[in-house]
Length: 267
Length: 317
Image (cartoon, rainbow over all chains, first blue to last red; front, side, top):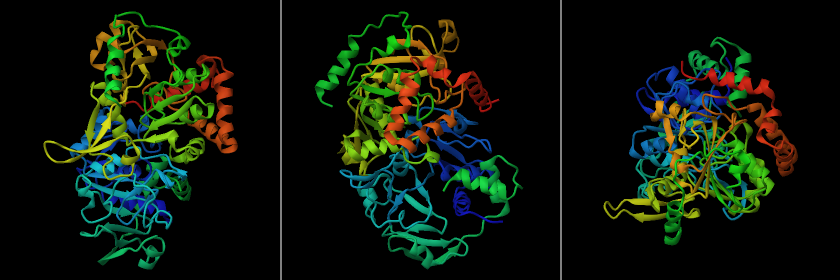
C-alpha cells in the first residue's frame, strides 16, 4: 500500500494522543489525527475545538473545514461559548494542544502572522486564531507539520505562538505556564526538545529516512538524541481508518480512496 | 482606552431607552443606525451564524471608515476593504479555510498598509468584548505573553499585585454597533441561540447599539416556554429584523449548511481579478440585487432547500 507523506504524518501524530486525555485540536491535520486516535486506540479522547465544542464525534466523509461549523459540532457533549473553551485551557484542563505550523524555529516558536517584518511584511498570513492561546495554556503542545527547509528556520520572522522562546527557562521568565511544545511530528521524523537548552532534537526517524535527510530539510542545526528510534510504518488498520474517515468510503478501498484522501487532507 | 472613553461608554448606555417595546424594523431601517466611522462587532464565527444580511446591507448603504471587529473573520472583511467601507479589521484570523489558501484581497490591503490589520489572539479578542460586557476597563490573561503579538497590540503587561505572576492586560472594546444573527427572537429582542453561542452574548452586552436579525420572529410565549435557551436579553437590543437565511451563504446552526460552492466561486473571482474580483462580487451580489431577498434569488429555492436538508443531516438524533 502506498502511503503519502501527509498520511504518514497524521497517523504518527495520532499515536501520541493517549486515551482518557483531552486534546485542543487545531484545524486540518491535527484535527484529523485527533479523530483518528479516537477511532483507534483512544476512544475516550476528548476533543476540544475552538468553536466551543466539547467532545465532538465527527462523521466519516463529513470532516469540517473549520473548527467552528456544524460538522465540527456534531456529537458534542457540550456547545459552549468560545471564551469558555479557552478559559478551560487557561485553567489547566487540557493535556495536549495540537497545532500545525507555517514556520517553526529550533525552540518550537511558531509564526502564523508575518513573513518579513511587521513594518514591511512580504506576506501577511491569516493570523493566530486560537493557536497563540493553545500554545500558551495547554499542558504540552504537539506540532504537526511537513518537514521543509522553508518551514524549519533558525529564527521565525514573528513569534505568533510561543514555544520555548529563546530556550532554557525563557518561557517561564516571560510569565507563561511551564510546558510548551514537547513533540514535533513530521513526514520525516519525530522531534523533541533538549531538556535544558530546549532546542529541537531528532528522537525518531520515519521509515527509510536518514538523519542527514532530516538535517537537509531543516534550516537550522538539529540536536540528535543518544538513541534515535525509528517510527513504524502505518498499519493497514491505521491507513484504512484514516482514508475512510476522510472520504467516507469503506476502509478496504483502493488507490482511488488514497487519491481522494490526499486531495482532501491537502498539500 | 482612556478614563474618559471608559466613562463615556457607560454614559452612552445609561442614556438609552430601556422600554419593553416592539423593535421590529425593516433591514434597511435597522442598518441606518450604523454610522460612518463606527466600530462594528460582527457576531457568529468565521462562516457560522454570520449576520450576512446585515453586513451586505451596510455595504449597500455605502458606509465608510468602518472598523470590523470579529473573532475569526471570513471573506466579508475582503468585501468591506475592497469596497472602501472598512479601514481596519480587528481580529485573530482572516480567511475562509485551509482549502482556499491565504486570502488574496486581505493580503493586498494589509501588505500595503500594516495598520489595516490589528491582530489579537482569539481569547484576547474575546476578552476585549468580555471586559466591556463586564463594565470593566480590562481583563488579565496568560495569553500573548512572550509572543510578538503583545507588543504590536494595545495590550500591556503587569505583575500581579497578589502573586507576582506576569500577566497580559487586555483593554475593553465597546463596539459602536453589534450585528448578531440568531435562530429566533421575539419582537422585544429576547433572542435564543441554538448550537454554539460563540461570543454573541458578550457582544450584545458590550455594544452601544445592537441590531439583531433572526431566522424567525416568534411570539413571546415561545421564548418564555424555554427561557434557558435565551442568550440575549431584550434591554440590550435596539432593532429586531426577521431575515430567513440571514446568514446565507454562511451557515446557521440547525437551519442550513454553508454553500461551499459559492465560496469557491468567490475565490475563483479573486484569484482571477484580485481586488477587482471582490469589487465585482459586491456589484453583482449587493448593488445589483437591491435587497437581501434579491441576493437570495440569485441562488434559487433549490439551492436554499438543499442546504437546509444538509444541515438536518448533521443534527443530533
